[in-house]
Image (cartoon, rainbow, N blue to C red; front, side):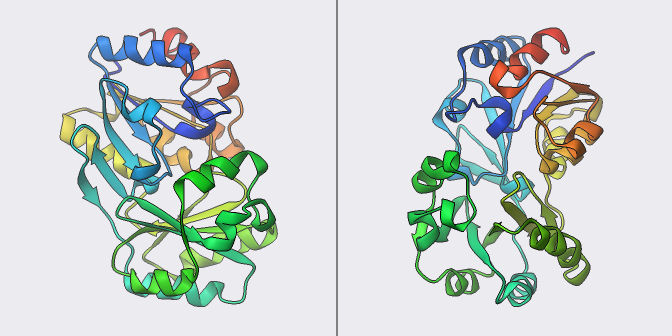
Length: 275
């Protein structure tokens, strides 16, 4: 296996339960970098919310963010490619979710914004207790999110719908792509439905970087745990799902490694990729 690039999902994959990079994962990534392997972040997060543990690790070069809507060169902060949502699709999303019990988040040029009431009390609106610090530390609160989204309709990397009702989530996931042709829909966790331009997706970001770096998919490995990682794991030569991954993620993978809490990334780098 000649792996020259590794694409890494962050939450519940590379990071531990405190949102940090563990000692073992750090050592494994550093060893891979020392062997000339390109390390790429592949996240649903906005660029400004990426953790210092990852972006400040020497040798981590690129970040696929907002589920592939934007790709950055980390050392310079330059955005190399961006797919913004169309104003028509933004208005259609707002129209088709009007009156539904959803909370909006919006990513604009790498910055995350969210409904102010949700930022104050994330759990009452669908987030987990564990997500409170992340939400409150990374979201810029906005009092009127619908007005904010409409004002930035030409600049949106993505919109997240925060939902407590799983039946509503699955109904919207099925109906929105059929009703709005310019939309890409995915999900990283049960409480979110993540919307972006139809050309987005982590797999799209990996393909863009593969072409930039002169690599074939067979020279790339990718790690993930969520439904939003499945296409990326299927695209690369070596897709590795975490033990804690969703069924769709595991089905798309070539291998399943240990749970993220057991440093499954480090285990796979050493025992599957043999780096």
